Image 1 (cartoon, one colour):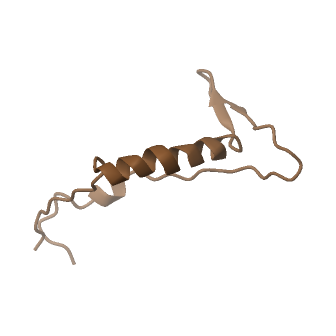
Image 2: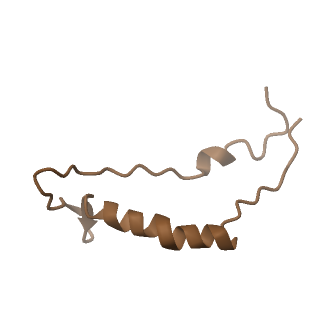
Length: 77
């Protein structure tokens, strides 16, 4: 039987906020210079200007829809 549990990710904790502000967001800003951008209503791709020894970065993100796929299920196998 499936039992509902409450999950708290702690994204508002002080140490997590500090990490986000001081480590994660500055790193993402540096990475963003290596990523393509999509601009305008037609989402035209604008490639980054890279030095010869730099490589482009393609960021892969996920959403949480797959984690909620069986939320309404009464039983699982």
